[in-house]
Image (spheres, rainbow, N blue to C red):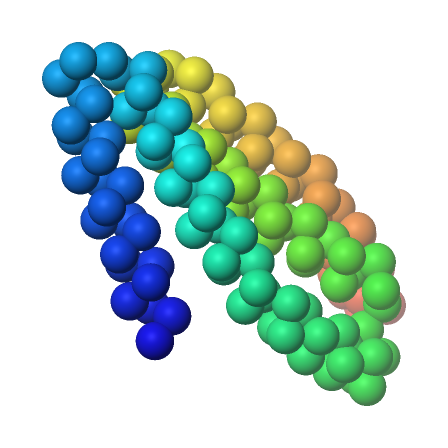
Length: 127
């Protein structure tokens, strides 16, 4: 099972990071980042089938491709920002993590503008 591999990588990374935390916090941070990137690469393999299904059904439903691209950008931005914020906060840089989170929220609003404009246009047509 793939989840056992994911859990094992997480637990081993946590133990190695805890060992290095006492002597060198920099090494602990690198272990955390390396394990996080490995786990993220495993997760990416599972996201491609989801993207294919969404694309297939959105074409059948007649959804604008700009909206689908915006949704993917929003999801990717949220996950990358969450990933980065967690690493920054875990390594004691809460302030920088909060700034990354703020930038991500602004970017999500920006990426959602095509969807919001289409919604307003649809509401205007209804009235």
